[in-house]
Image (cartoon, rainbow, N blue to C red):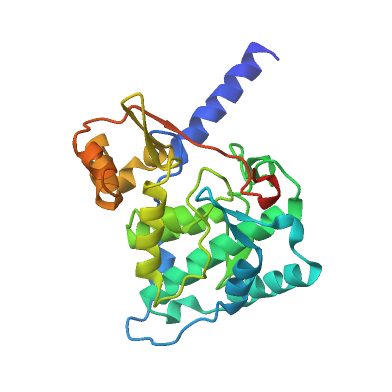
Length: 281
């Protein structure tokens, strides 16, 4: 490659980096898509997520090690068709007409069901990051590809998480609700989210992750956390101190006491291996 060509590519990379919103760690930052702010606070209508709940009951394996895995290999053709029909039905919902709690459940269930469907479409894979659907120069995995259409707007998984859920709800517990199909991420919950159960499920999911070694662990006296707390530190207050305060809120004793004596985070880690029940030890 000529020097002129190299300079051209380098300039292109710098230009793209300048317009793509990211956190300091390189993960996408919350970037509000204002179109999705519309809602009806007085609405009492609910959305039926029974199909997704049935899928989870049939194919989510609750591990003795505290990690929930999906039995991707055991999903029948009929069950796969039902999941696709459920996703099609969600794409026909006029979500603007619902209240905020129902909207939250809608977006989380859409994200999680769509993620499972993407994995099923490419199974077997060792990691969701091996699923290359394109979607951008810096694409890594399926997250940037437009996969669904809601109210005439094409959406990617990144859109749902980083342009809708995170900036609209401004709640760090969003990270415990959406599942990236990896062993390192918070558990895919065994029930579908609803407007009614949302708060209880978020609290339970946060507590489960914080008190599991893949969430946080003291190693040789150092606090080692999930990379989620590094990638999205801005959602947890923006500093080691605020992250530790968040962790302390959900930690059981004596872990909470140990956290209260801790002033800084000593490292982070993440396991991108697929949350595949067939690979459980």
